[in-house]
Amino acid sequence: MRRPALRNAEGTPVDPVPVLVVVALAFMVSVSIGPIYGQAYGLSLAASLAVSGGAFLLTAVGAYRWLVRDAHPEVAGEVDPADRFATLVYLALALLALFVGLTVPLL
Image (tube, rainbow, N blue to C red):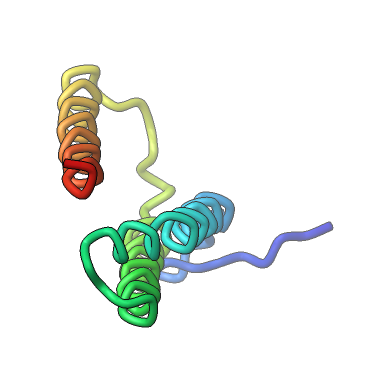
């Protein structure tokens, strides 16, 4: 079965799987825990669902821009270990900030 080819801004075909995975995970997380934490912060169910939907849409648009429109598969190659480590540190700090934000309603 042939996958439909997404194209970046220059018209080069881009693999659709990474963007589909990111969008599916964003939907799963936003719908499953977003309304619960929204209500824990004092929002109504409708407002919680709206915020979760907005977060999902922002994530989906960002994933499309980053992984499809601005992608350059022709220059993909090995990444410098220092750059990979810096990215890992930034992601760990973002995850820590997310965990702290998720525990605030529990205090």
